[in-house]
Image (cartoon, rainbow, N blue to C red; front, side):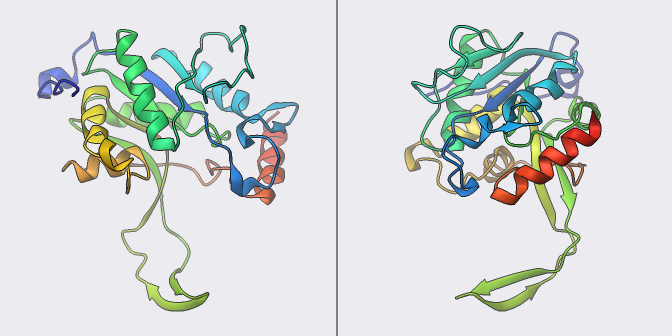
Amino acid sequence: MSERPEQITPFDAIRSDLRCHLLLPCAGLGSRAGIAQPKQYQPLAGQPMVLHTLAAFEKIDRLHIRLLVVAPGDTTFGAMPPAGVTVASCGGSSRAHSVFNGLEVLHQMGAAPMDWVLVHDAARCLVEPAQVNALMDACWEDAVGGLLALPLADTLKAGTDGRVAATVDRSGKWLAQTPQMFRLGALRLAMELHLDRNFSGVTDESSAMEMAGHRPLLVRGSAQNFKVTYPEDFSLAEAVLRSRT
């Protein structure tokens, strides 16, 4: 059982010795992407997708440890990981399991329970440093932390058997994105509560924190910060990447 995280006080929230770490789960197979290899390694604009993702965080000076969690046996980076990045072969059977294992590695590397951790999807390769900095600025003195998200703009339908069952009121609805930023100790504890159920219901870090009784902060993200999931997403992501260069 992990130790209980320290009690957060307003003084703790602004302590100058607190650090922030990056945790990038990169162990998924991307089965919906329609490609043979894991989607995070699919070439986009001349290099694997995950390297575009990491490049955005290279420009964030406030990050201390940058941890990339890959599947056991993944030798993509071999003995030459990306500069400034630690690669841990501790990926689990689900994204949540990979994140939990990554939190354990950060703890073993000396990250403190009160330190912040940014968890980001490897397949959100279009995130920009300005968005990450906006999230960090908004959360740094917050007692809980928060996530990038977008207010829902489209009409939302509930479906049954391939047909519309109801139109859902979209007011107050947000599309969750990453990074998501929480205290390492608090997030470990929140996720550990679901370990014996294989993290059932934990769809992102915010959901774990919510089920533990917290109310994460919503920080407006960008429509370009979408998660590359389906085959058509690759061409759109590549077009955006090339337009930026």
